[in-house]
Length: 387
Image 1 (cartoon, rainbow, N blue to C red):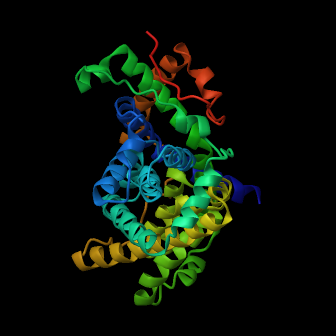
Image 2 (tube, rainbow, N blue to C red):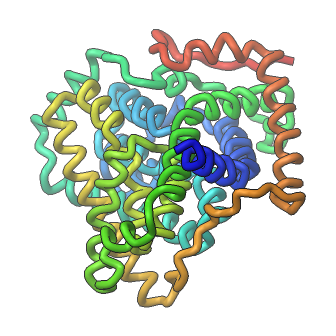
Image 3 (cartoon, rainbow, N blue to C red):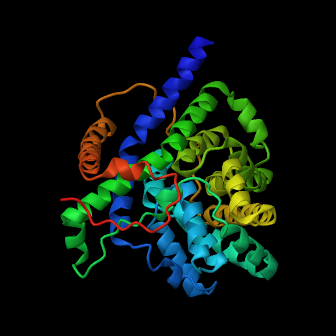
């Protein structure tokens, strides 16, 4: 038993070491984007569910934090301030599926095909969601959800979602990034994004390590219908989101688990559907209940699931027709020994970058802001930056 646990922990550590530098790079780039993109105008830019508003929602979501809880909290904040509900949900989906750190980790751990599939599939998923909302979302249900949202019941990452530390002035973009205020804002976003998702990352690594070490490949192959290729292409996207629902892992933490599922035999579309489904895991569904009420929570689960599975099926068909689906199920989850290779050197370099950002965070009032991450803020915080 002890050896089995140690093996699972070794697998988890190996996967964590493999994705460490991509995580640091992704969160640093995300911090740069967030430092120059203000939340102030978001609600005004999302007045309806027109193609223009949905496109803006996708762009704003891609520029935001990858934390699922922060995305859900910010989407409610936008809705309460006047944004269209459909556009707010499109923003929420983009916040967890089009962000930089997710793409980088998928590239390193699973390959460029999965990164491309996520980039293509996420807008398709949002388009399906918009069509479902236009067909089935009743105005009275939106009014009930708005009344519940205005009660302000707390979920998770409320303070993180409301903080706006962007550097907004007339200076050119690169001068804002290189300024003292810009460096401070980047460091604050970097540390707080890490603080918001580290539990999901660690949880995902531990679950992925345990599954990789303990679950026989025959069991995976039987569950994912590997012996029935055409049926598996349909089964994978349908079951992928359901596996995510009960895994409790969201944000970028589900990528190591997705790699294990891929190695276990789930279809290409099944992996994509699983990654999409971080917004319908059980803890997030409970937050929907608090934010919008039982009826809307059920509606969101049904429509999100349909959009995720539908988009994954379409991606499976597109990539299959184009011959882009990898023939071998070999994601990088099995190297348990560390070596002085390019991964180690990159980790050392990016750990130095992380140390510099954490030092700036600590010297510019960051700990006080960190304590407010899970507390709703009565007024929007603006960041002037330390020098």
